[in-house]
Length: 344
Image (cartoon, rainbow, N blue to C red):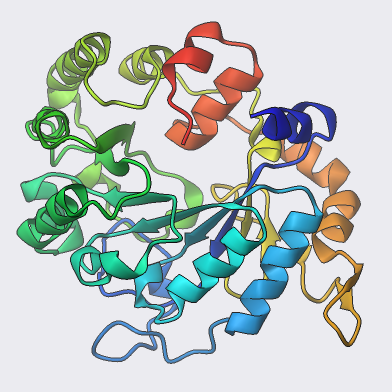
């Protein structure tokens, strides 16, 4: 925490790099634009396009560590499709980083035994109806993987279930909180679905919470706040849950001190909502023949885009993504959020 505080408050730099390690996916979630940009896949969902090599990923990790970043998140359409994911995580751990990965859970049971170097695993879970209708996925397979991870003794830290609240699952979200409590070694986070420009042709009328569902939504949020007070394993702060209930966006964003994103082409982003590439971190780097960093492309892009990043945050209308929002609340000295949001 001391290192993170120094990085965020003094150096004013991100503490986590969220790195897209591949472009293929084994699902076709209606709200996701990532797989839509990478339709050239085989029958298993593996991308036929060029994804970063293991060596290229290691360079990104080296640049991040040199920049002062202490956490590595292997993020993408579905990172567990990468056969060398365990080696990637092992390399990040060898550099002293905390390691994360985000998955849809379909391959969790199959690959759990390989993930000894992953500190935190986040699984997207929406409830049976939403999982079937939005993700077209086998809900039982996902829950089976979560149950196996919890009971196997292989988890380094509690597994996180991340649930997006939509018009499809208002009757199912609270059940997930009870499931997490009963299973043990499981945490849960919630955030609301909402539209933003880069989501392309998503049918938001089908996903959004309708006016006639607002009363049910408010009732659900009050139930989640009450469960949080009772000690259920919700990592969201009560402040965030109340603001979501009241449909308030988190402003005065501090994402520039939290998460830095790099896609599978090595393009750097300060915010995945604005989704504007700031520069290519590999193309702006120089390494000697032994791999030593002579010029850090992350620092180069970061320094060159200071004005652009500042304007992006100042002009932002705000958002409700729990990771961005909770980080902002803490950086803006919201006491309840600092203690109520469980840092991963």
